[in-house]
Image (cartoon, rainbow, N blue to C red):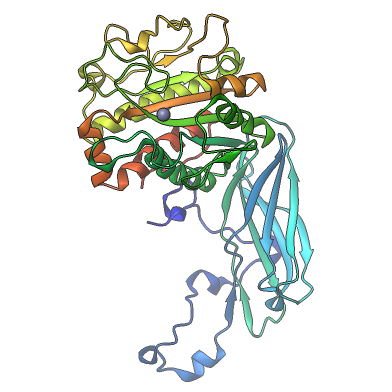
Length: 404
Ligand SMILES: [Zn+2]
């Protein structure tokens, strides 16, 4: 199914483009079919106008209150004027932000506009570009396809690199989390959330380091959030039932236990708005529920009631990580060193830049049933990504994807 169809809110009725309003026949217009079997009415076919529509707009976060919109000039020869519009939810109408005049020459520029918002609070909008055609006898303007954009940007950190942290059935944490991250990026962008990824393939080069698991590379991952103007840092992982696996002491858990664990860093913990703690809660809750839905074994208590509990009720001491036992219900942990700094290097680096961060252990790759489920069904990566996307967007109150 296309992304366009699965975003809540995109099914809104077509709204005319103000001064660029379409003729009444536009709603029933269909693209010209050149197949011989449909060319029975040659007179009609020869009179058909070519539809002209802007189908895509790229966006990026410029600053906390500025969103950059960019679209192609590929149809300049058919277009006289462009109108970039933003949907006003309270007014229930599209409003023109800017008009741009076509030079009639395709391929010599991009159209760019930076939308300045009235505040820096998280905001999600729908944008579209409508047009006036250059020759109304030959072309017919069609409302542009709308897309979401916002002033929020997320740093995704697919944990590890290459084929690190193998499980059974050919599973690798590094490869699996890259797959989740790539899907997550797609879903977030569809919801208008900008994304920076610390790696986009099996290898990672960051801060002058390539494919290293040491502190330098881990710090570089965490620092990438601030240097790329991101609002939150999110590190994606699966866990292991062995001592100090990923710095996480799990020796007291039965090897069959599969459990989602979410950590937040000091900045998130102290964030007055609570947005990122709320996000972490959602991520833990939704992935736990998704594991259950997918038939991936979980702790019996969680299966019965996948409820997340808010900080600060649970551990802040590295020797008493409450979520590592079956006795406690907490699934979000603010885990620190005795110095009071964040335990995980990536979260510590993000916090040192004042960026709230999350590290999520979606499942345990030491549980064969999990590895089997993930490797046998490519949709598991998409389900995880959609679950995380809904958690992230939901924390900001944004419209998000409904399903895959
Ligand atoms: Zn990991």
